[in-house]
Image 1 (cartoon, rainbow, N blue to C red):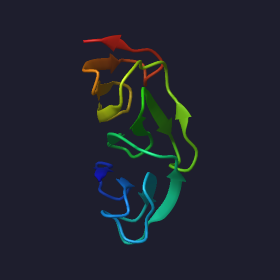
Image 2 (cartoon, helix red, strand yellow):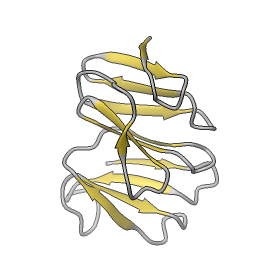
Image 3 (cartoon, rainbow, N blue to C red):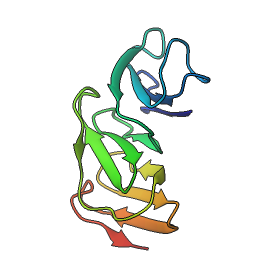
Image 4 (cartoon, rainbow, N blue to C red):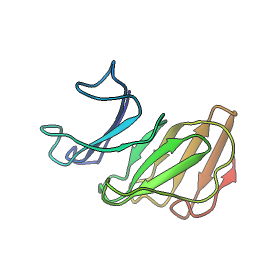
Length: 122
């Protein structure tokens, strides 16, 4: 299971499997907009890697096999830039969501300085 929070702790994003989250099925993302009091299942697309949320809660990031996905509402997700090969197992993001780091099992460490439109190896 992976979990990430906005700076105020109100917006939470969790990636779960059936062993780690009640009533879930493997590979689902869950979103809470009220500090964890209630959860909404938002995507079930298989394995998810690292999760990150900008401090203001406006940009959400989730890792998958060779890709980082981004969302502004937690419900719709789109790939953000070409990341490369390997499962993305860790993501870190700056407070404003503009600088994003992604680590894969390849092993590769990548950074984006433009909200993940482009990536460079570190």
